[in-house]
Length: 90
Image 1 (cartoon, rainbow, N blue to C red):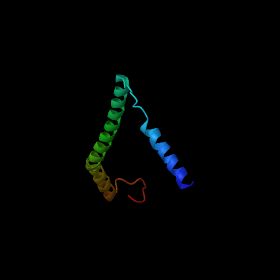
Image 2 (spheres, helix red, strand yellow):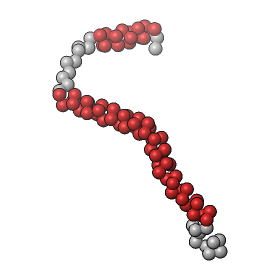
Image 3 (tube, rainbow, N blue to C red):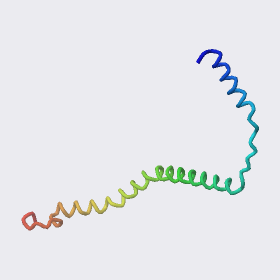
């Protein structure tokens, strides 16, 4: 394109966008409630994920403490020879 054609095209584009009338749009209460419901769902999911990440180490610690006495009892039985099923080992 030459310089004159660019000028005419640019001027036409500017005039086209300058002449646009404002659009009067109405958003009803149903659309607003739908938007709020969707945002509430997103916020609830983010909150649940963060809560899970914060509680996860605590749950692991509690599980480890609950399983520790069972593991100790099994190791004592194995050391005493009561835990094996092979008669040659006892």
